Amino acid sequence: MALSVGIVGLPNVGKSTLFNALLQSAKAAAANYPFCTIEPNVGTVEVPDQRLQEIAKRERSRKVTPTFIEFVDIAGLVRNASKGEGLGNQFLAHIREVDAIAMVLRCFEDPQVVHVEGSVDPVRDAQIIDLELIAKDLETVEKRLERVEKMARLGDKKSREELEALKALKPILEDMEPLRRHAHTLPAEVLDYARRNLFLLTLKPLLYVANVGERDLPEGNPLSQKVFKYAQEEVAPAVLICAKLEEELIGLEGEEKEELLRSYGLKEPGLNKLIREAYKLLELITFFTAGEKETRAWTLKKGTRAPQAAGKIHSDFERGFIAAEVINYEDYIKVGSMAKAKELGLVRLEGKEYEVRDGDIVYFRFNV
Image (cartoon, rainbow, N blue to C red; front, side, top):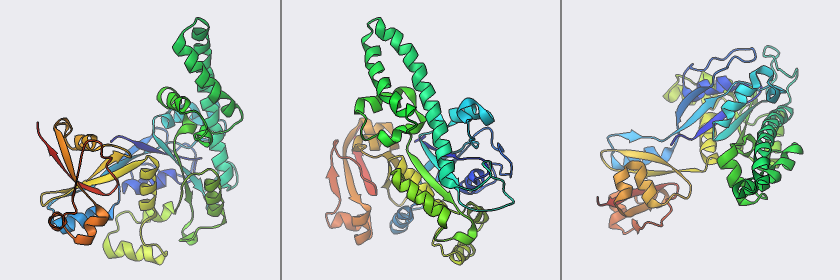
């Protein structure tokens, strides 16, 4: 599933350092000057899921295959990016191509790392980015309106419907409001039109990343607290990360890695939570197939029915779908194995209308 999360932010907030850590490599350049990243770096990252390892261990699987999510490191935006400042139009076009946004906000003071705005204020930075995304969306809507109005005046029915949707979107953007704030009040047909035809930036799901210094772990600091408060007001998730520490963890394994985490009061890398939150932000779930040969995690959009889930494995499975044998992880873990679950009658038989749930362990019956 090629769904992607774009890492955005002002220059020098830790985006590329974070991306390096995500990829466990130095693929994305990190340096102390604006526009270090110009072309977006793209990386596929394993989704950490302890359930996969637990199932594989209990089923004595010879192979374990995780599921993945794609991250895109997009160059730093600056004030007036929508007007072309700092190659802004190019960078905004890159954001248009991702499915969700992880906005990295600097929550650390360091005189050695310049801030493009001259001071550290993560909420101000978030608002600067939002204003640039809003300005670009308004430009998109106005250009489309200009074309559609001509066709609507000529009596084209589809253009008249499109015109109504555009007229609903434009006033929100003119008020300098991101469209995601109004996603619950705009008519469903307007949202559907905007997402299918306009790919508007402020409609994309958003996650805030508060990047703190090492000394502020594990609780954060007043700057990160401002980010979490702002995220709550925006009804968006937020995670606390120290990109510098995450980069230091690259290459460490086992006890050495755990010892460094413990020294900062952490049980796991902050990246694990970031990846999981990004996964949820895209409304993705994980189901599993399990056996001695392989235990594997599969990615699905929430609400996907059993035949389409089967199609993720092989198109023949969907085409010849008969039924799905299902047990959820929570029930599975209580009994310890698929063999025991079947013996106790805990494995359900589900048909074509069944929506696969996060944590389901599934065996598909099919006939082609």
